[in-house]
Length: 340
Image (cartoon, rainbow, N blue to C red):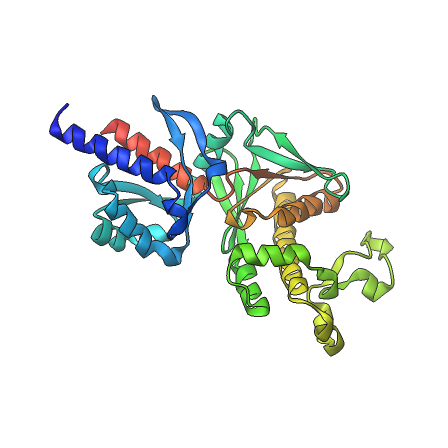
């Protein structure tokens, strides 16, 4: 073994040790151990695919860690996607000695999704849905295969939302989007409740009652609006009760967090349903970091798709919600390495 090969091997050992340690949790990044893919064969290389995330605000300490662990000695180039690939390109070059190969965000998203669904999740299905979503007592998570996935409506929920009609891995179009996404949920929760993190906002929402904040159909009609099959429990006006000082004085921060979550989720579901109907697509797949540890929103989306379509639309979800773009970029990096 040459001296150069020994240095590369030592760098690999350092990085592997770092990935498996708890050091990550004490710094700027978090490792989603429950999502790692074991014994994965990628172009003849077998190993574990790790999933690590950090907030945009922590990009500087992350780059310091990249430099410290000498990753640049192994790869002078990293495939990257999304807005950060452009915004932080110079930071990667100056701080970590790494060049970024900038890839199309939506192309990477679709490629990563199809790949992870094809390899599965450590012997299980990557995709799942909620059975009996309109019955809270009988609603259960069920595995699902995305065999013959096209066409599909792909709803990517991050800080904002993009809705794609996907006809093949290479043929797709962005139909529309909305600025009201996960960033809106967290931003409003920080303002309304004083929370600091996404996890804290979701915890508060899980304990609240949005009906104390939202005006329902029954608050207007005294019951169901039968002509249009609107149940009395349907939200007629998000935050509609907040016009009343008496109501404002009686609500909790948890109620506000729950109402905010319902407002954002219902808006996304409504847009997704209209796009699916317009494009005549009955497979709707929801992905994105907004859905991380967010079973409340997933069940709301499943309910909305099923109820308003009279069972014609099914909401599908994936275990690696917000990592598909990164996986798509990783696959391109492996492809480039094989060809070099």
